[in-house]
Length: 563
Image 1 (cartoon, rainbow, N blue to C red):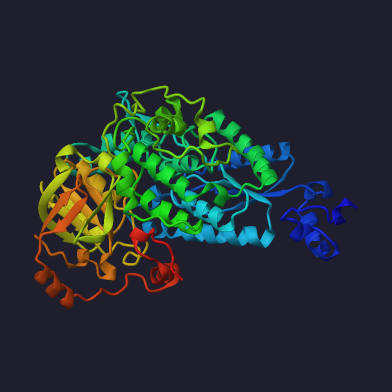
Image 2 (cartoon, rainbow, N blue to C red):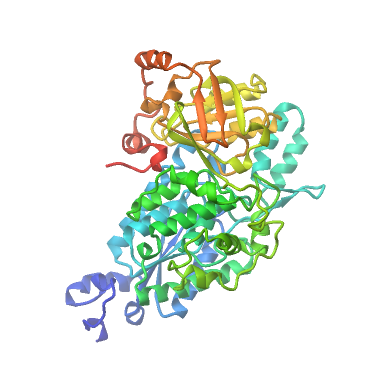
């Protein structure tokens, strides 16, 4: 029988070749596989399908298309699951503590499944927020031929008056209701129309940011970040990904051949041009770490300084992912960036070709969606890292979504030790123009889990304070957040950072163009407060979150686990 021949170099031979593996084969036969199927490369298809995340509800169809592509190219697909949390549904309650922490669970469980079953290659089928970076971390860690095919973005919603809408508008509508500028019927109209289809929410939020950057870094085929989930083109892309993984296996092209230091620099450059979520500043360093690459948060400002911002997708503007797709997608943005040699185009990608070869036929099809390099929204990129005594190791702001009048701001601190305390005062109309809302003990350790502050930021904007109030936190933000929302403050309060020493009424100065943030308190006074500071009791003392809090590093390091 050909089954016993020792002429194959497949990784999966560890579970299917030789007399010693007869027990293993018996279990594979129990699954219904034939000898012919087992003689082919076994390709793991990591399915993130579930019935609680809108971006994942259609992934079963994507998985079937991927499997069809694998079979067409001579492989045997084998499906197994990965978990995913819907950040929108988890928002505003204890569930958000469990969002970021799943990134490591996803990476670890995928490592376990792949190593236990010795697949020859992988097709990752993720979509929403922490699912994508978690599987990228796993891909870099495992380093076997891998390609990504995401579920794709949701279509934009449409209100009765013809205006298009999205999830960020929905959250801000709640703030407008509390401000008395929108009634219950208005909230209901947003509720029923903001999210009209399957897919990751329709703006340049975290899921779509990471799906686009996966394409930019070279781990996904063109269109991965932008083809809308409901379109048949998404299923064709999935079949192409299934076929392409067989080529990657044949040529032994692995993630670390693609995810090089230069590729991460390309991804950060595209990040700045697109105006991606601030969460990319957590995820890219964590993914890079698994690939043996170090990304310093300080590099972000250097890349931003030379990278024009070319796109204003929601929440920064009124265009959506479907518009970006029609304009030529991520590759069209990358093509613009090559006009000033801002990308390394010599790099290998999962297409088996270089970036230059991939971009050769690409055109910007709509300069109103993707501005030409000669006419950007701004000469610097979408994200800025601020430093000062309030954030000695840095903090992050999506500057492309900040109102011009808030780029430089000084105001009194309004201090809260949790999201819940802050949102109560915001809805209670106790926050006034000029204030700087400080929410602390929400960092990776202090949360634990580093919750998103979308509810407070949306409340501020929805109540008409987005052009006059800033928010600073050691937590993080949704990609749907806009305004002067400054997160990832490091060191965090629970680690003894200065944000834990801020007192009500202290003046805080913010200078985004010059990348500075300062607590206007003398060094002597800060030293006095530091000596008197006592770290509060942990908010969670049992279970996974307690273990996570003991192992997690600071946000400026990507909130990776240190063991």
